[in-house]
Image 1 (cartoon, rainbow, N blue to C red):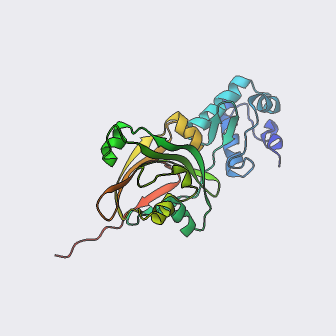
Image 2 (cartoon, rainbow, N blue to C red; image 1 turned 135 degrees about the vertical axis):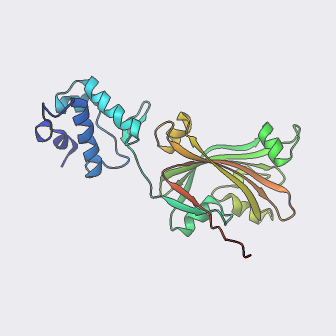
Image 3 (cartoon, rainbow, N blue to C red; image 1 turned 45 degrees about the vertical axis):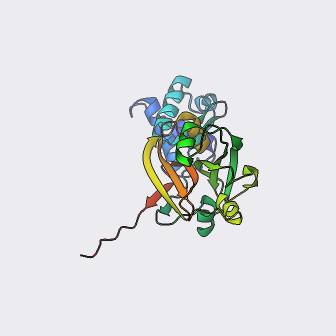
Length: 252
């Protein structure tokens, strides 16, 4: 069944069944549930839906905005509205220090990246504090959107001293593989996790509604010598990741 046929009002609209935008919202939601509107697919334009249903564009806009507020629809400026893509949740154990690429490979998923920033820069105050750098030092910085099987999962911002990562352009897939080849792979890390509402700019990259729930993770990784090797700030989609910690009760 085509989207136009599914939205034909004779099949679902009832004049005495409540406001038109509420009924349209319910019909669109049913389209998602029944697979007529597929995850990641574009929603017909407001004018097209108005033409099919004979509703005003104000009514159509109100129904779409209601679905966008709950996360069923993602609105992208200049591109239109899309059915939200909900990736399979991934469980990440906090007892292992692995890279995103290694983690996805173990799960049989293909990891890819979209580079947002990569190079050598003057360090920020947070980088100087975390990595023990001075204002005269430089820092290697890589920022990328991480994807699993084509689905955006996280935005990862990693900073490292330049003697540990002299050439950020050498990182093509796994940062830890490059560090291991140079003899600088971290052996332990301290990690903090907090819940946030994803800012609009990051939400667009992650294909979620602005202010949707997310997980912010800050990790400081150490070499065997105890030196700080890496400071990473990551932002994960809240609907895509579960972090699991195994706790043991100490023996008396």
